[in-house]
Image (cartoon, rainbow, N blue to C red; front, top):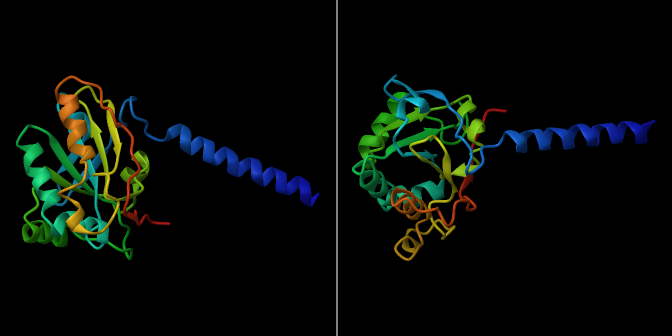
Length: 204
């Protein structure tokens, strides 16, 4: 009886894993539409940005890997560079209340001013719905969506998975590489890479 029950449990767990994988956002497939509210109370839908490239950046200002890119000014530089070229850049905070990196709208807006960040908007996702929809795993974790709504890139900012800002100048920037190739009408060579950083602090 116990052996039978154990087998049932294994099958249920395996099925849940397969179901999660089946619903995970995959490169080359349509990016899931979403509705989320930003730190100024404005509602954003992915469908609002049809015809544009969209970057989704998961962040946690208390994570050392995130601070690497913000304290050095690297993430802000990327935000300015790509938004000036017409890319919609949506930063996402999926930390739950009481978890590392959770912020109120007022706190996030003050932080944006302090670090001189310039995304198109910061989407607040305390319930983790948007993060789970995209299977965002770390902070940072980057996604690129093309003007037709197809997911083009899923992964890390660059190829140096450290917390040392001194590594940034010599790193291969996967995000910029993906955008450059896609805007030139080329296939993205490294469409999936392994993101690095702190695990997203989802609500349980």
